[in-house]
Structures are given as C-alpha cells and as structure tokens.
Image 1 (cartoon, rainbow, N blue to C red):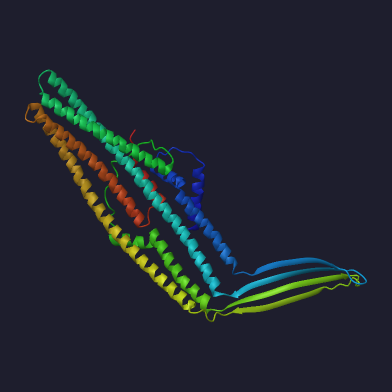
Image 2 (cartoon, rainbow, N blue to C red; image 1 turned 90 degrees about the horizontal axis):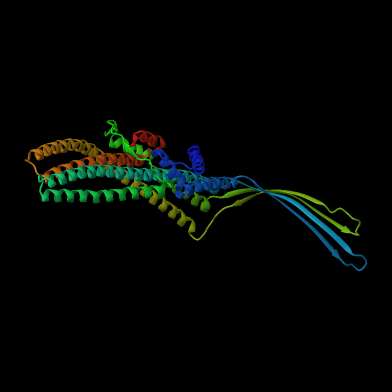
Length: 439
C-alpha cells in the first residue's frame, strides 16, 4: 500500500506542475485528483501518521540525556576571599525494558497509519467515481443536445416545406400552425439542452479546474452485457476483500481491540525501566591550595511501577474499551449489510438495463418504420401532418432515451466497481478506449 500511495502522491505533484487540456476520460480523472483539496488533505494525514509512527516507536528505545552545569562563587572571609568554581557533567539513560502499554501504543499508531492509507485510497476512489459520473453527465447532456438539434433541423425542414405548400394552397393554415408550434416547442427543448451542457461543463470545471471542450461519445460497439461468470455472491466476496469502507472498518475493529489491551496494560500490568547515569562533579577553591575536588560516579538501577488501585477507574476504562469495540464490530456488520444490498440492487439494475437497451433498440426500429409509413401515408393523403410530426418526435425521443440508457448502464457499472473495490486506474483507462470523438 505504501508504494501505491507514494506513486499517487508523485502523480499529484507532477500534474500540479503541468497545465493540460483534458481530452480523455482518464485525463479528466487525473485533473480531478490534482484539483481536489480533500485528497491532498488525506495525503498530508498519511504523511503525518507516518511520522507519528516513527515518534511512537522511539519510546521503545533508550533515551539518553546529557546535562552540564558550571558555577562560580566568591565569598569574603575574615582573612582571605574564597573563590569557588564548580562544574558537573552527567549522562543519564532511561530504557523501558518491559512495558506492554508502550508496545500496544505502537500497535495503535501502526493501525492509525494503516487507516490513513485506506482513507487516502477511499478518498481517491470516491473522487474517481464522482468525476467520472460528472463526465458522463456531460456526455449525456451533449448526446441529448445532438439529438435535439437533429430534430430541430428536421422540423425546420418540414416547416419550410409546409410554408411552401401553404403558399400554393396544398396545405391548410392549421397544418402551418401545427408545424410552427412543433418547431417552437423543439427550439425550447434545444435551449434547455444547451443549458444542461453548459451546467455539466461548469460542474466539471469546478472539479478539474479545466474547461472540457473536447466532445466524446460512447462507441456504438460498446458491449451492453454482463460477464456471464459474474454473480451476486462473487461480487459480495470481492467487496468483503476490497471495499474501502469495509477495510477502514476492519482496521477500526482492530484498533478497538488493541485499545482494550492498552487499557488493561495501563491499569494492571507492571512496567520496568532500566536507569543509569555517569556523573562527574569538580570543585576548585582558592586560596585553599587549588586542590582538585573532582568526584566521578556511576549508577545503574531498575525502576518498577505496579498499578494497584485507582478507585475503580481501571476496570471502568477496560469495560468502556470493550463496549467501544462491540460498537465498532456492529458498525462493520451494518456497513456490510448495506454494501450487500447495494450490490444486489446494482446487479439487478444492470440486468434490467441490458433488457431495456435491447428493447429500446427494437423500439427505435419500430419508430423508424412507423415514421416511414406515416410519411408515405402523408404523401398520398391518408395521414395528416400532426401524425407525421408525432411520428418524427417519437423516433427522436426513442433515440435519445436509448443513448441515455447506454450511458446510465456505464455509470451503474462504475458504481458496482466502487462497491466491490475494483474501480482502479486500469479500469478507467480500459473504459476510456470506448469513448470516441464526435468530430
């Protein structure tokens, strides 16, 4: 995990020094990583926890302190003045040779460091899903605008044709008004579609800090199907192993269990400290012969601390830690239930989407045939203009709904990948290959 996070931090640093124009799904993802303060905060927390681990481990090793003092004293005597110079040097050592509480404290910080890494990964994955969803919202808006513009063009052509027919008496004023009303309605829809595109672009700009101008669309060859080997049970097993929220809660359970041991050690376990010192004290006085009054000393000892009684606080803190551990365990169980439900729901939605898209394809073919029949009937006078306009509108609506279904299918697959903890950069790059330019 450490190598993975370090490489991600390097990528963020490289991207932050480069100004690029996003032209692909993967570039949008990278720009979102660069621009997100939450991810940078998670990275900083990870680095801080790493240093905290180093600090805490240092408590397991001997601590050595050097002390030095220098003094001078003068006193007026009845015969002679007395000048005294003193200096002392000492080297003191403390070494906790037995302290279960310290060992458990190191374990606690290691778990906190591990949790910071999972939090970073979780933040990154959430950001990826959000950015990709917003990108596909833009593609949906652009697809709707494209279909609406085609409908505007078709209706404008029909309006022009109806005007000419009206001028020569082949169309009634009602036909002209109906066509004009249909055209005006589609123009309003086009304005709304343009607004949706503009809004989606602004959302992505806020996410990435870049204007997304390059227009993409999902390839018509993109497979709308599910892996036949994929089952709900296999997806749930993947989530149990890889879901970032579950991994974080698993670490929380381990931390809570470790906290029980910390409280037991603090209140019930003795600690032993090895102490030692080397000292030199030197006193020189004048005029008393300038004698050397140096004294060297060395000491070594063992200090034992045994908690005996603290008014019932020891047992209370242990019971408190046990209760907190039970709470975290239940939180994990609840989260797992929620994840399993989400996976079952997404899997069912994907199955439904596959059927809907296939049915929508058939509907487009039916709407197209109906339009051709209505146009032929209109040409020979068996169908009226309103029926023709309705047939055109039905076809364009079916085409627009079909594209929305396809994009929603992709977004649901991305949500499923996040639930199972499989939303990786490789998956994003693989999906990016299915997006083609509309130019």
